[in-house]
Length: 94
Image: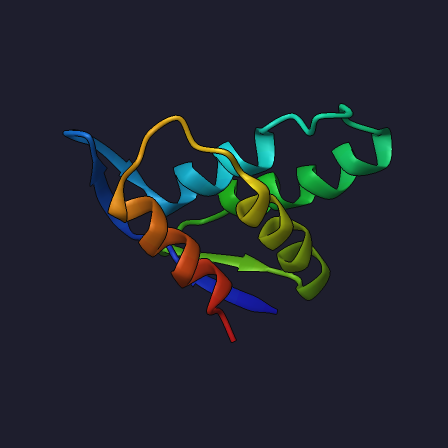
């Protein structure tokens, strides 16, 4: 089980959070589209984010690996240091 702290951040003068960035990565459509298996795997991550009630996102190890792949392959439309910090924080979960 991996636990990720849901930080509140500001990107381009707009309030956001690590959970919002994670959802953006998970919901980003792969170039080849979604298979049903991919939808199931990503849905588990979405469920974990939605169950965040204490400021912490808890992911099973396999779900974390899938989420990490989504985070690492995400193409962003803005350049912002907060996105880099999010990526580093998510990749650094022990």
